[in-house]
Length: 283
Image (cartoon, rainbow, N blue to C red; front, top):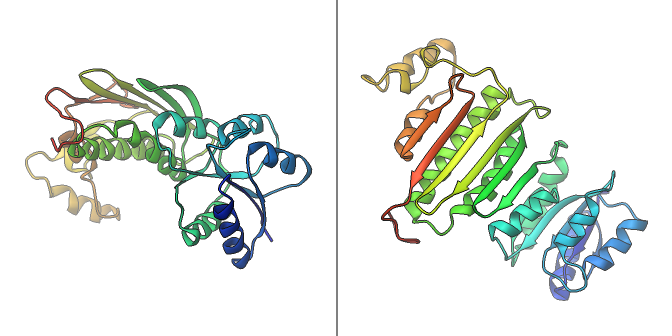
C-alpha cells in the first residue's frame, strides 16, 4: 500500500483529503505545516507528499529546499492557489512533479496521485535562472518533462493578450517536443536547454537540443518543405508509414514573428514582439 503524506495548514482540507485517499486504498498521514511534516519525514518513509506551499512555521517551498539534499525523498505534488512564475519555478527547483490548483477536487487528487506513482522515475529539471525576465532550465529528454515545463513556462506570459499567449504556448511546445523527440531521441539521460527572456518589447525563447541537427531538404515528410503544395507531404508520410501530421513547423512559423535556427539546426530561437499589445486583450 503506497504511503502518502498530506501537508496543509487548512485542517478541514487536509482531513478531507485523508478520508478520500484512504478510501481509495492509500495509507495516509497528515501534517499542518512544513515543520511538522519534516519531523514525520525524518522518522517514516512516504512514497508521495501532497504539499501546500504557503503555511506558517515552515512553508512548502522551505521544506522542498531542505529535502533537496536527501538521497531518498517522496515524490511531490504541489497544491497551491499561487501560480505566479516565481513560486512555480521555486517548486520546480525543489523537484515537485505536478501542480494542483487550490481549492482541489479530492477525486482529481486521487487520479493525479495514481498517475504520479505509476510514472517512471526521471532525472530532475534543473533551474539555472529563475529571474522573471530571464528563466533558464535544463530539461531531461522525455515527454513527461515537456508537459511539466510547458505548464510552468506558459504562465510566464500570463499578462499578455490571449491570442499572443496561445501562439507562444503552441510554438514553445511544438519546438520543445521536436527537440526532445528528434534531438534527444527521448533519452532522459540527455537534456535540452531552454532560455526565456522577457524584454519590454519582446519575448524570446531559445531551445538547444543535444542532437546533430537536421537539414530542411531531408524533411520531405513535412509541410514546410512543400511551400507550393502544403498537402503534398501527406502522401510521402503515408508511404513512409508515418502518423498523420507534418504541419508543426509551418504553424510555428505562422505563430511567431521570427524563427531562427543556428547552422546545424540543433538550436532555435523564436521571438514574439509586444509592441501595440494590451495585456489581457486579444491581439
